[in-house]
Length: 468
Image (cartoon, rainbow, N blue to C red):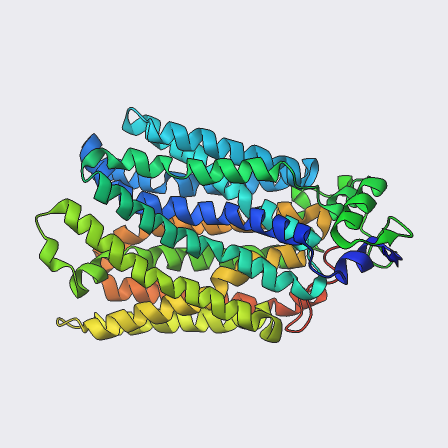
């Protein structure tokens, strides 16, 4: 029998998980899965693309980073559009966009066409960050929001492992330089399935309420919880001004600027380090195990893919630890611990490679510590914090801005760090990356109190006030 609830916040916050909750969560998480899948499948495909199109190093770097640059644009612009037009609408449109440009990427006829299609595909991938985070935050019970957000983002690592598996299967079935077309087209099938199922999802009840659609919000709440609302409203102590009063300029107002810095700057700094250390991964793997493949580029691509996939399992382990600990320690503490661990891992690797004789065991140890602590902490928490700290009318805008800052950091890591490494050497570069992690740590500690006032608490509570 349906129960009555006083308001939408109470009904959603105290609800038990229903099949609709799980469906909304899973279809949101699969968008993040496609991000990891696409990024890793390109890493497998780029040696084949380079040979097929006879790419220069400049073209190879441009195509490799095109989707990341596109994600910067997509997260920045489509987050604000999501706050204006709704979670569900943009959820569907952006996935259809992914489908279109994934197909065009697989059919690319020149390096320039591939660059353009990859950039536009990246814009669709970037958009899924603020949409999925906002959607999950606004429908999940309060006690589970942090856990469900991190669990959804962990699908990025699952997508990376799946991308490696598909890449290996394609290479085994077609061991030649044109196999990259099948790899880049492989994401079409899961994206099409997700797009079809997303059409059945309801709009976020909090977004409906913030835009004056009280009855529709009550109807969605009833579908989610089985509760018949007495009042289709939020509690008067947490109600926000009308959504029309918010815009991207609000992120830099006195009220929100500390939160904007806290959510964007650490994400930017983390991705410089994340993509920077990623540049050394193939070198580490080759030095550890795969020197016997020299001269056979297909075998080398397969071997490095196998080894990187094995190491990427650490990303999954890190996410698993975050899911276990997030309710107990809270996102701010885990972000603090994670930045310390990332800096330590980079310092270990720098020390191991500082002398003429590289200590491979310690290089590997540093890489393990970095990957594990990255996903235990900042890689998960930087995704969670914008959804936790910004109110409903500004949530996707704030999350999109923070995610775009992260993608900008990725671009810096991809383009500038190889130049810095060539001039300063590997150990110095790694120490600079460690410094970026420590700066992220300092910002997290300095602005922690602002996050707690916005509703992000150290532990045991999950952003009750920010959802309104």
